[in-house]
Length: 113
Length: 114
Image: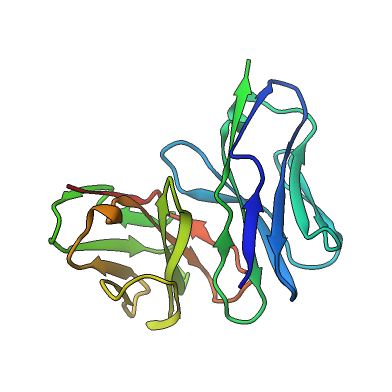
């Protein structure tokens, strides 16, 4: 069974600084990878996903993630964060073949003014 | 389009009772999945329904059950509630079933078991 490890449970960062949220997965077969964001008192929203093709995927609000098959990682990055990016971020993986999505435990990003 | 709606938003029950949670997917979406979110275990998959059929089931006891209606609305039921069932229950819908599908989440139902 696949699993997802988000290496940092909490990441504080100053406004306009860069940030990287780390995600590693374990699977010996092909996977699809997702990042979801959860703002306070809301459900999750898709940030970006990797299905195939270019290993670098981008979201509309400046986040990007790179699929690294050899390191089984899908780290999320943003070059300059805003206060409004404060939220919990979840990495998720699904193995091809009628299997459910598996989420990491989440990383709470706190942006400090 | 309206988003995924879940009712009720908050619920307080006592041990031994049962509870039914409801989820209305985005119009046109035929797949509905349920997740349990707790601080200790994170997000755990409960089950997925597509066209009224359960496609997948997570590792939860039989006290957790669900169903989907012909209009794609879904309900989940938890019988004989335990303190550990206190959690945020999230419903997500997608247009089709499949591993690459984006899931659209509702705001959740927060259940407190006393």
